Length: 283
Length: 248
View 1 (cartoon, rainbow over the protein chains, first blue to last red):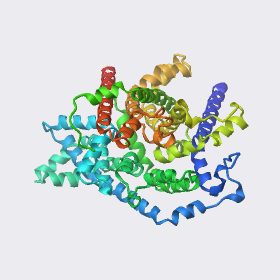
View 2: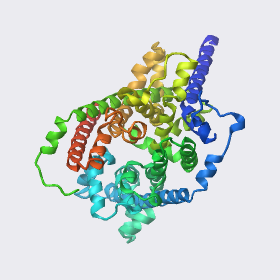
View 3: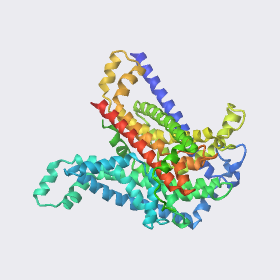
View 4: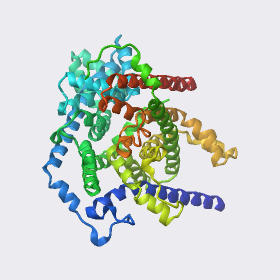
């Protein structure tokens, strides 16, 4: 018995050592990014390169520079506007669609659901050429509204798929009772179905926020004006601006961009895991 | 620019005859074949390690998930900076652990550039795999493990005969999602190598993007993306079929 305990403890210690080691290797790139953002711009190409900056050389000058530029606030607000509009509209549209698909037996349901699966399989970037033609025809090029409808279209299939699963689990009796009471479809949707499905709506909204917040290829294609840029293309633009990249500025801006994401991630961890695992464990 | 006359299947013929198309096609295949199993294996290993511990489980999970929420643009720039010829990694390999005898020009060669993108892809994907595999592992009935222990199975046999069959559905789900993601690689290539040298490191999407928006060949690009969508669609159907036939 004692030897069994000892092997148990040994395997436990092994697990912790491996996990700690993995985690250290894993976080090195992020730590290096932060450490680079905290050293003076001139020291970035020092040789030999240092993982941590010299203690006396630590500086916030990169952050001061980024925060002194009015452009940064504009880019930040653009990203906030695009992301929030996307998640609100996508949540409304996909929960309504999920309600109908999950709670009513319509002939078109199979067809619509087929389209949803199909568009989940073919990623948005593949369709960038026809999307660009569409945006040109609709006069949306170089406009923030050239981003929002496309982001919504990208996230709706996955969101609907997720929320539908939740809607299906709402007991039919609850809804039947309100039908008998004379409630219409809208009332049942807003008063009964939506509140019950709200955990699913919350978790897809977090994912949709991330998608819109970090999206690069489409924004880079549609937006030209510096003032209309979202954060990812602003960072990428910084990177290509000069012959010698100002890595300190690039990483300071990156850290500032990551802060809201990491805050949301840590605060909403529960919804994250829920959203991730809902589609994967079944079957 | 957008209005071009109908020209039958000429665009498709051009795509398949193009030497660069073959290069970028191979690049995309190699990227997918290496990053998909790579991140699944490391993610599953992390999940198995996490599944057996009680303290700090959430801490490890949160930290290991951070790369997933880091945007592709930022992560790509960090990797580009680390893999710079005079950068940190080369210095570490050459001067500190002394496994190389010169700086490796990671970003200037075809497989060097693609390797950096692949390492980034695996790094960024591990957290997602970890979370979904951890959820799957928690669904494997504990009595199966107990039964196999009584039968005298070691850790490896338990993994092969209990764990793997138990999480089969999740493995297939991850396989489908990640294969689609592998062919969708775009931002990392664009930020790390930009396709250099001479489109040697381009993938299907970055090449399509270049053709459309740098040379104005929208027809060629549309033909290419249709071929790609068709391949992904077929792949997904095959994988769904596999999943269903295994379930029955």
